[in-house]
Image (tube, rainbow, N blue to C red; front, side, top):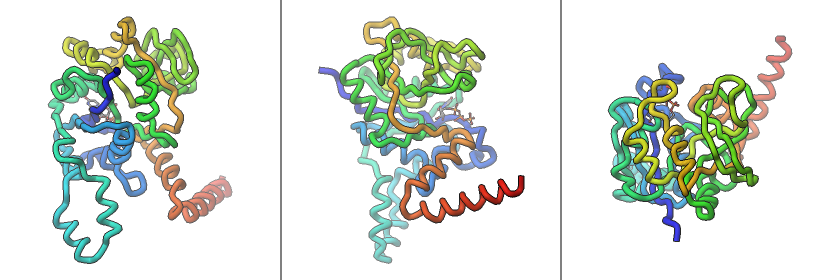
Length: 297
Ligand code: UTP
């Protein structure tokens, strides 16, 4: 039987320069969509997919992230005293079982591949998931759960893929597909941030992966690739000719790039509009400002 995926790595050691000055003191993953930090969406998605061990690769200045998953006795006591049971309930989503969460430091931001490699000893010899919390995916069935279900059939390595317009391809890792089976595509090549006109397809890799431990072995001796960083894509590409192979999965859902300002704002609006308590007010506000804007043009 195929080994279940129960461990996930959350690489959060990047500097988040696109959100400076905010990220000078606030980790990007703690920034909130409506009332929950990005990292909460990632943890919920992992839990839904059956993940039991949560490994964060962090860096200096990310203490707020560790505190977020800790109990807060003074706050809890205060809420209890005031009879705010509903808020105590809200806090429960932030608690982790003892020993279920681990933090590893990436001492230097040498790239996503290097960040994942930093967690190698906690992964040992089993398949694992990687979730980038700044890719937030709104989906009926959480994206990683869709992938785990597909992985149970295929095994091997799997990356979440979405179609992008040709002019956007140079911002992503792009898949070269040998066999397209609808929601799954067998991969025969991967190009990180291809030059204009050189993308082998319109299928872009986004921040969800299920990987074999062999990817970690490749990372053991990998040198910096595109952008001077150790690229995870390059290590995954090394698996293409292995027996396990690499699959791209077209997930069902909408992905927001919350690592960019525009994506973060779009996600904020989309997640707020999905909330019954906020939808009506927000919608009339948005209509109003769009009209004012049009009138001014
Ligand atoms: P990004 O490319 O978005 O980089 O990393 P960043 O530093 O977070 O943000 P910008 O570009 O400076 O604004 C993608 C993911 O990989 C992690 C990041 O934390 C993010 O989750 N990462 C990246 C690391 O953990 N370590 C690295 O060395 C690089």
